[in-house]
Image 1 (cartoon, helix red, strand yellow):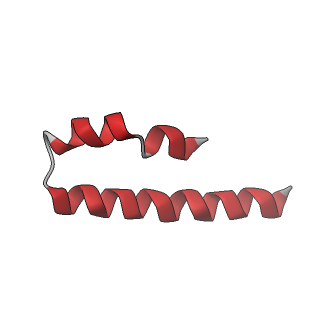
Image 2: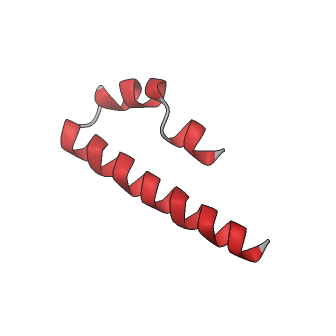
Length: 46
């Protein structure tokens, strides 16, 4: 559910107005890895 908000197309459009493409790519990769790790950790606990 976090990825829906964190990596949405409207957010990328808004960020493209204030950030360079390289930073947006780094942001997307970081958020994807973070959400994946949190998801695995959450499933491990349950």
